[in-house]
Length: 125
Image 1 (cartoon, rainbow, N blue to C red):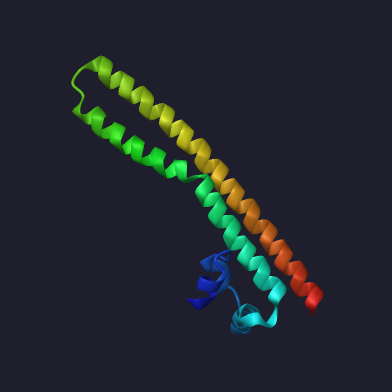
Image 2 (spheres, rainbow, N blue to C red):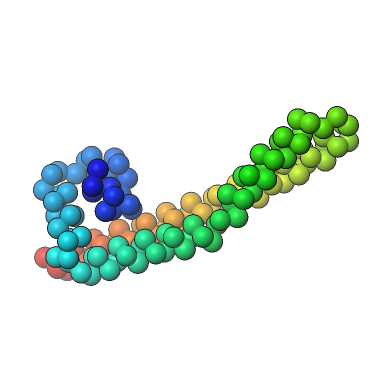
């Protein structure tokens, strides 16, 4: 769906709830009719990219957890299994915290972007 490609901040449900004329308005904005909104969108995409880069360690943690789970399956000694299980639990807690922070930052950014676009649309009418 082209609208979703051009507006990554929208969810599929939001787009499906829109009328066709609203889709056209959005696509027209992106074709340079409203450069302020286009600039806001570019900034939003750059900010999302920066947040993803900031939390790249989250994806590394997930890989480490999977590796530790493999080691846990291969471990024979009970003490070794307990140590590995403790490391898995600690990494899972760290990953959960990072994931929650990541989602919160993305959500706040998306909310601010929507407010800014709404304000610009209201002002430009």
